[in-house]
Image (cartoon, rainbow, N blue to C red):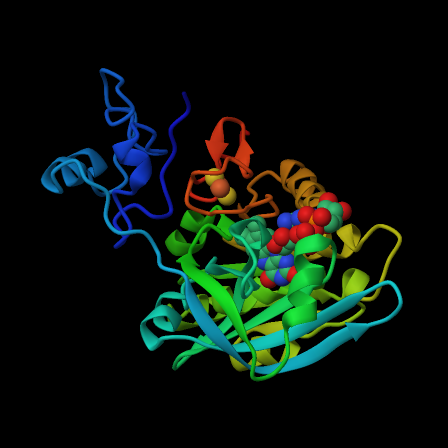
Length: 312
Ligand SMILES: Cc1cc2nc3c(=O)[nH]c(=O)nc-3n(C[C@H](O)[C@H](O)[C@H](O)COP(=O)(O)OP(=O)(O)OC[C@H]3O[C@@H](n4cnc5c(N)ncnc54)[C@H](O)[C@@H]3O)c2cc1C
Ligand code: FES
């Protein structure tokens, strides 16, 4: 069975119930195998588990979050999207500042299967800002119950929203190119802020995608990034992005968008002699984000917790 570093390793939520069940995503010893295969990610989950008396730490608790505001960012017969500001405990909002953070949100009173994973666009002093595109049953339900002053059910923080995050951490003081399109723009704001804090530089190439709205521009500029809004092009701007990658030395390329965008950019990088490292936003289906339900399984790994290697 595949093992891979876990986004929760070393957090308040590790070891989790998967360890009790012998199903830890990162530790082959906890899984009952005779040898350690974790490759040492800086801490030993097995030792932590034994120290904790082979018991899981308490899991993330669901809470009620009040909607402070709702702002439409797209409203056409075919496309609907809106921003939500939610009031949450300050400790939770502090843990949501990390790049790749997301929360699960659903209408109050509905069961867990209505959980919508949403990237944290901004997090400060007990206020989370999220962007929601309405695409199917769960987001339609959330749209219907999202009114100022109402409460939604929220659980978090989770951190597996950006795969390849380790490259961003390693090169945070370097040079990062972000390509962000559509609703996935939301998750690049904390990434830009993080790189800026580490004194790196961020350039962002943005597109509205199906939303037709570039809603992060002012936030990215405030986070110290330089940004350009690209026009719609037949080649999805791959030519423009290729020129950008050749003209400047970037340490990391962060792709925020649909899988087709991730794959297009991967192809560009394959043609380069010395390509930047690649990070990409997660588009997996998720329900529990705790490694239990299996909605997010890919290549034998639970992508809500595991770092997914580029080879999968
Ligand atoms: C870590 C993470 C962060 C996310 N952040 C955001 C966010 O900030 N804002 C936001 O609006 N959405 C975000 N999503 C996607 C969002 O969670 C899904 O669109 C939603 O759960 C779909 O549920 P549904 O029942 O409304 O639609 P479904 O019936 O599940 O899907 C309807 C349509 O959307 C497509 N779809 C479903 N899920 C995804 C996905 N993850 N990526 C691409 N296409 C998908 C399906 O192929 C289908 O065509 C994120 C997903 C993940 C995993
Ligand atoms: S979302 Fe449930 S196992 Fe990953």
